[in-house]
Length: 150
Image (cartoon, rainbow, N blue to C red; front, side, top):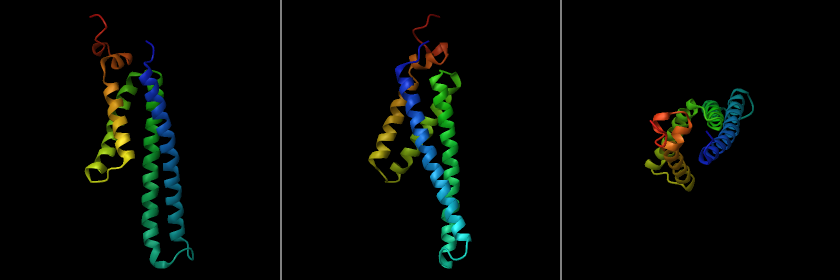
């Protein structure tokens, strides 16, 4: 079966988002490590600031590491979508649901930005598209392809 155009767009979007997420997460991790190193080295910052820099540096490191892991999963999902692998449908569905949740939580807490709204709308559109019977059928699930004879 030929890859639907929407799946091609979704795979490219996931690939692009994963690349940016990986770069930003790498920078978070690097800056966090740098802050921790500066906090532990004498003479680089006032003594009263060291615990704060160390805490922020440690948090930045772990946030960056988690972000890089998420980016890796997104790279894998994009590759699978491109090749129409059945497991990639599930992985993409999970990635989109998690992304939607991560965009909606700040909005429920009162932080409503154009970026959050736009990302949430894209997540919803791609989720709806991903669960349509024709697209689901492209990933090898014969039961969800309504046009296929019984």
